[in-house]
Image 1 (cartoon, each protein chain N blue to C red):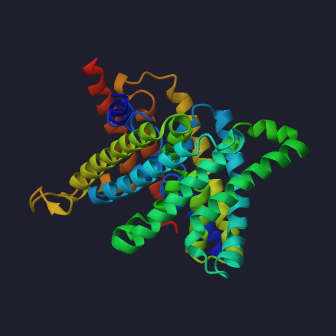
Image 2: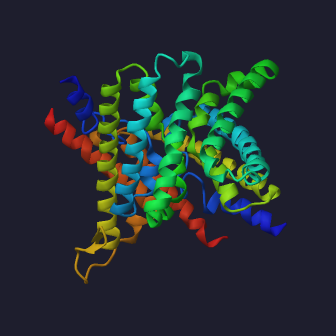
Image 3: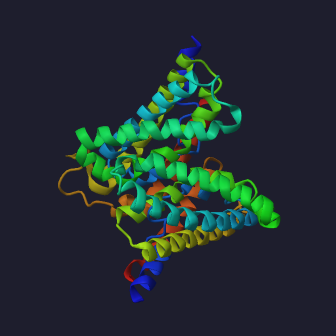
Length: 191
Length: 197
């Protein structure tokens, strides 16, 4: 039990997927200008990343490793993720239209979010068992969403302040992300 | 003439990841040293050129409704090729770049060029575009890698240039340092761009 708890803390704070593992930085800088879009993206990522982590784990363990096709992992995983996203989109549209409208444009964009493929690959590279893979996926996605929402809050404040000309836009965003990453570095002693 | 233009636009006007803010994850993660930066840049260039060519060849056959899925399959195929080639010939580099080699599949630059350029243009123009953007990306990664390696380690390409008395500035090679360095480089590029106007 403590192992799992440590894993959660490590994935959310110490090795935060955005700030320490550098995965999923494009949406991190792309959709963090407004709080509500950041929350939408965060929700969509939690949802898809968890499902993708579990499904790709089964594909790896029961299909790729059994049939000796591990070298095709990249191509199989991205296909699984792409079709999963498509499936989730169709399913939500039909059965939970409110959630679908909320997630909107972010759902298709998740296919090319490297956090999803990244976590799927880490899961199988580290030979996680099913529970570990599930917990690692959920915790990583939570860490992603938390960092994204915090960052959006910072950027909303920043939009109101005066920034020197050449630093405007992405440059100041990156430096802010660096400072945030520095803050997260402080969790290093915890796990 | 226009092919030259397609090639050179990737080197300054649309140089990734500065002008096109895409593909940030490998940029931040692998640029602890210049060697890693060059390796990652070349691997991405390879995928970019060949996926651009193949997408352009197939552009009239691929139905537009499922084009993104088709592009991803094309890109993933070349990424697997790069992975296997690197495992065979440059194993230490392959180990250092680690997870970021398979993640070229989801590098937005590659998919972005397939969607924005190769799907609409001729084979030669697409190849030139892919090569230009790829080399631009390699240059960016090498520059960032060189700066971080020089400040954080006192070396460039593992050759000591700062002398034995240099105290390494470890912040630059840590995770927060990556963000700050990239931000400052972007700021520098904006200043140079303003001067040119």
